Image (cartoon, rainbow over all chains, first blue to last red; front, side):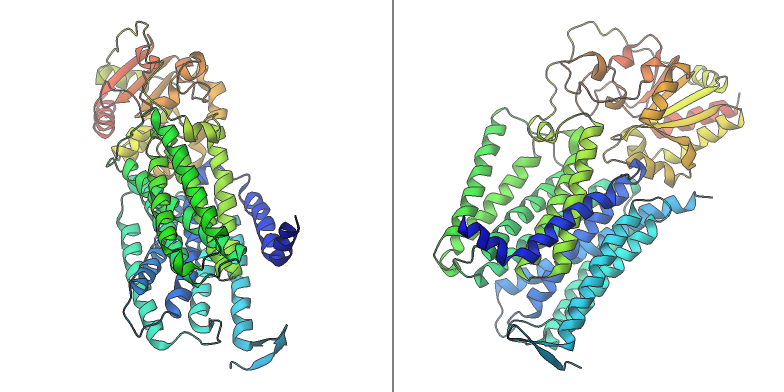
Length: 104
Length: 479
């Protein structure tokens, strides 16, 4: 029990962020018309590419003095993350472009 | 510019650190605003731009201002390597996204989701050696990020393969148990790594084993899930990718990653549940109760399918007052949305009221049909959702089913033993006449017979949807 309380206390800010973000996520997309399900899913998918920040930090502080498998994997992670971000936003934009056109 | 401003809890903080955190706050807010705008038709495109600019901001400031625990920034050589990697990813991502056909969109979203999950998996794997044994919190987020990221990665790849027609459905009764065993083994391995007192350097074998187990579980998890449920699976895996990114955010104590990830995790989960609701099934039922060809394939005499000639079909349509078009995956696969729009305009010019009935899970993704028809410039107001069109079905003269099957299968309402029992459908069978355009006599994606096709009011027009529609348009023009 004490350990659980300690865990909560150590990570209280993080737990706050999680709890509020969950509600925010639910609130933000409730009432979305089914027309927009696919673009919304695609846009959300692009946002999940935020892992790229982790990739930048990882490779940014990597030791370059020796060539290592870790460096290669880190660069791969960066490429993957960028694919998710750039591809995701580009695809979403392309879908939404079509909605725009026929509005008039 | 990187002046030390003071100390907080014994830690020095500088202008650079403050600006970095401030940029993360702005990025996080842009994600929220972007997602909010994305859920309204008029503002959706702007929302996408806002979210993308938030991501761009966070990337640039991280590159310029991030410092490691010793206060060292990112050195120039590393910056070049990062820029090259981003350049490669951005070029491929952009070109593929611009070039791909609209029909291949669901696969592409699934593929990009896989790369996001893969990135989370790699980041967690590479950060593991830096973790400290006994620090339950940091080990927990690393292990969770690894497991969830790996499942999202391999699972999304299989989903991509299925949607692209490269991977078939494999469902054996023992797989449910095998998957359960795999899941328990994965979780047990994860718990073992988190609570083990050994330093990470001695646990590398375990983290590699955990990666392998999670990857295999991702494959086995999606493998038995069949056709009609693929939209739900993609949405679920999308939610996983978000959660995995958030876990990686905890490793770096990075608020933009945490908020962005959890936001997507929650939004994706809600979207998943909305889709399940549209099919009147529970999420658990989707995951373990895969569709199969079993049960209700029908012992009863189905009767015969009756074909219709082009001229009969064109006369029937031209002299109707109310026509409802029910599009399905066949329309997308045949790229027939433009010629479908042509038929619609031709009929409208003859005074026929043409509307489209959109089933929430028609196609391979929720909203798939809306995107396709929007591409063909079909006005917004002509697309009617299932609940609104169903009361009008008995007054409809002709329902034209184009490449749809399970979403108009009356067995969902009448046959409790059917695999799709309880799924709401578009009540095409209540209209006065039904024309079904279909490639062959085969079954739909759920692998079950459709009694609508044998109905006395139903006439079939076999062939590729685009060819059939084109011939029909020509026929009506020559009337």
